[in-house]
Amino acid sequence: MSFDTLGLEPDVLRSVHDKGYSNPTPIQEQAIPIALTGKDLIGSAQTGTGKTAAFCLPALSLLKAHNAEKSPRCLILEPTRELAGQVDDNLELYGKHLDLKVALIHGGVKYGGQEKALEEGADIVVATPGRLLDHMEKGNISLAGIEILILDEVDRMLDMGFIEDVNYMVSQCPKERQTLFFSATVPDPIKKLADTVLTDPASVELGGRRAPAETVDHAIYPVDAIQKFDLLVSMIERMDYDSVLIFTRTKIDADRITRWLKERNHPVVTMHSDRTQAERKAALEGFKSGKYEILVATDIASRGLDISGITHVINYNVPQHCEDYVHRIGRTGRAAKEGEAFTLFSTDETSFLSNIENFIGKTIPRRKWENFHYRNEPLLNSPPPRKRRNRGYSGPGTSFGRR
Image (cartoon, rainbow, N blue to C red; front, side, top):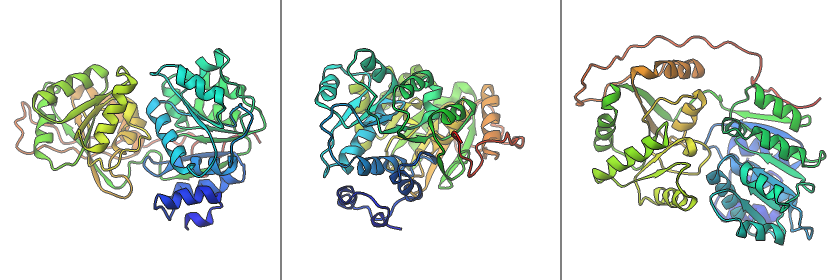
């Protein structure tokens, strides 16, 4: 199937062709025709599959042209500034032949420019929940004219404590609207939210939400906690990479590892929530451009960010949340390219690792880094994961919403 057959607005299709795209990804191929009918949709797919365009392209096609009314007609909620900025970039790219105005609303920057964009009239508002709530309380924006509501990375918003704010914002939107709902996982709180905000939705689910991409070779490297940094340095200095994304559990660890790697003359930069928006943007752009070969980050970088060409992902710590493991290692091996993901594991993280293996239903291979001087011989044997119980939801073809 080609983009020409999906039913997109001609000016949107022209932008797609300008970019050199001809064939949609599977999530785009299935989600775009449904969204163009105005039907509610709940969708999920592995990271790196083109999900952002799957909702941006139909939204632009349905809105078509600027409305003289200043109330926004489309609201897209994202959990982080980086994801909101990425969606804004996509809207600018694909909507360049349309007369539509977009306002980007997130924290970390001053209010003035955002207030001006809202005052001048925005057809589409891309926002993070906290800053949007601030503007609502100030009376800078009304959601009474929303025709299309898009909730992206909903499970991540749940993890970050935004669900109550999201519920409130949804309640301020008209009941008669289209809602597009994207979430990598659907635990009970997300299912309840979906039941509330969606009406007889279609469902698009591609790939196992629990399964790492087949293009990623991932493995566990057992090591004493005190030797983790030494092993990390050995990996960086001896493996063949183009770019490396290192995930840490805490912001303190991210800063510390970045500092130590800089002392060893590695081109490295860090990104986490305590960095200013300007610092985060500069770090991301520098990593994308190749100025920095190594990015050290917390889970702020694990989802959705459009960073191509990452050849290696290293988990300095075993992720505490099972879903985060799949999302983290999914930053490599994208767009059918192969990638490698290493996780440094110490015995105090056994329960986290066991939960991850139960979640994905597989034992992750244990490996030894050759020619590294271990204080204690790494344990390479592990028990098989327990079989997951079927709890009766989130299965293929399941749809959620009012009947």
